[in-house]
Image (cartoon, rainbow, N blue to C red; front, side, top):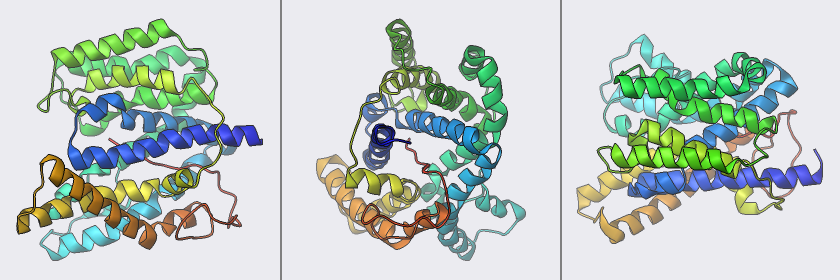
Length: 343
């Protein structure tokens, strides 16, 4: 890839970094407006879908193994802390606990970790998308439009029929369109901006959300159909451009540690809130939010320094405390792809 290609990829790094920061702020504050201003989860699935398509083109079915190799070690670090602590605190051992090693279904959790591991749903959905991609990509390239429409149609059926499918099926319908738009981005199909389509999706998503608010109002996480339509409009805008951007150290750090940040931010937020409640510190309001964000940021920085290097090892890079310093020698030739998200 030439210099221009690498600099343009910095734009995708920027989107990923913004999503990483947005998820931490959203989970710390609960501000529903953030889900509208930047639908980070759908954007991250779209970016991951684009990278998965590129990886499949380059490595074939082995792309699945490579992506799992990038994802699972960082997950195992968190699981290595969470599962023993749950077993000590009373979780009864059975075979479903083994799902924490490869969480294609929701593994059991108890106590503190029921909240602390709540964001692990993303890893479950991501694994399914990765496993299905070798089958989905050829179908998409033969029938692009029907393939993209399929998950949106499925979500519409689920919504209008009032069906309550398993969580995996619901999320494949909710975020499958974003993943497939990532395929389209990789294949250069989103360069032409169709404003009539973007406008129609945005209006439909906004109209449905306004007329069908969830328990937290206009938090799109509670309004699946509105979320999918609004996010599709967002993706079509922001993935249709490819500005040239130069490297910035902060982008390098956030992208090289995005998975660690995603996995650990919720346990830290829960721990800080429980501590605040125990000692009587303010939790809500600007005062509570401000100090909690500051403390979570510091704790995240400590965790990233302590275990973030695992992402370097799984990516075939020389481990470092803070990425983006001197050029490193790759341990093995692994494509520069990163998994990250944010709800």
